[in-house]
Length: 148
Image 1 (tube, rainbow, N blue to C red):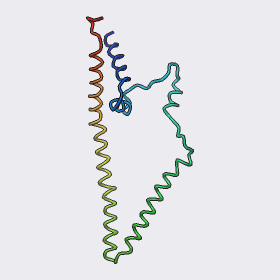
Image 2 (cartoon, rainbow, N blue to C red):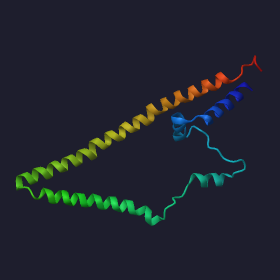
Image 3 (cartoon, rainbow, N blue to C red):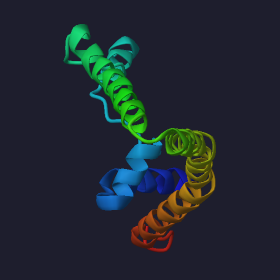
Image 4 (cartoon, helix red, strand yellow):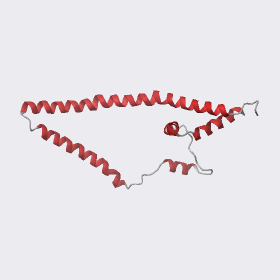
């Protein structure tokens, strides 16, 4: 009986949590979703699978624009490099290629690994401390067996 009351208090405290702690709980899915009573599982799935409000043609346009920007920037970079004398041209184009490879191979990999580390080690520890604080607050406001 006491355990069930503690669980309901904790659930209630988690629902009331706002601010940064509430945003973290929402991002990690630790807070239960609210549904009206009587909603079927199919409706819940439909709500979770929200369709885009844009037509499919408009969803392709940003990808096409980014690809075109990539190729146009590369084209002008090569044209600019061809304006130099031959020795300087080859050295400049080589340095551009090396810096591009360095960005793709080293820096992006390090960024991905750092984000994975943060999400797997730092964020759960932060989330656990937030949930523990909420549980302590809920337990502090919960009446003891002597008061019941």
